[in-house]
Length: 245
Image (cartoon, rainbow, N blue to C red; front, side, top):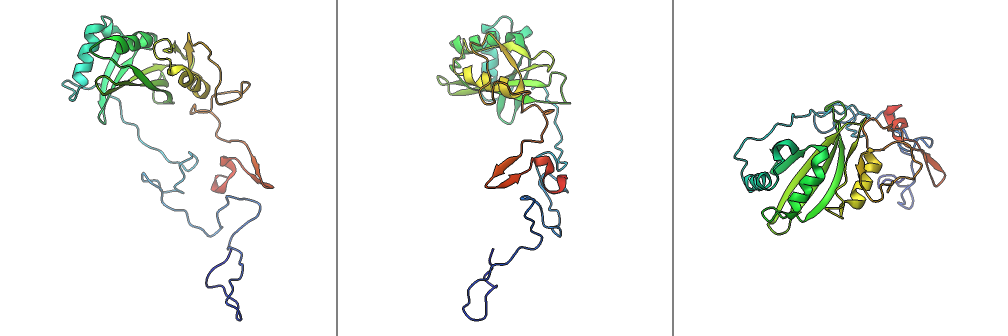
């Protein structure tokens, strides 16, 4: 490492210098005299966001929206309620937040609701652009949520469906028969969160090896990681770097 101010007396050529506090045995080690910085969201520690720095974000309760919702949201709810007689039993609550409409659906009814959302002429949500998982560990008894992003190309509208299951019984119907695009997306959600989509044509891991134990994006999955060797140096797992030791 060189500095423009580190020049010898005769040629003005930069002279290599060793940074203060550097160590060859810990690639991510802070210099001993470096003070901890201030992070975002009011964090007073290192500013680290891996979970080891003690960063805690408060959770807001998810409350049902009151009508009128605004935008096209009332029309979508009314059309679904008219086309689907089991609406009252299937829809747990309707949430409008940050300009998005979310229908919370009972897990056993998710495929039926998707079928109506796609086929009814007043709805026409022809595309399922995403199926993803969320783990609300410690905040919800049914901690594992599956989120479906539906798009109506006919009416240029977006709607989110959300279904929640427990970690002890993480089953809900697959929607691949309704939306073929959900095939690999459900496999990824199964791989990362352990949510089982009953009726899926080939529910196998898609990112992790077939013999991998556990589901890496669950909140109670160990964060230690795996040591990586790079050009002769070993990069330790996150919990063994810097001040985490």
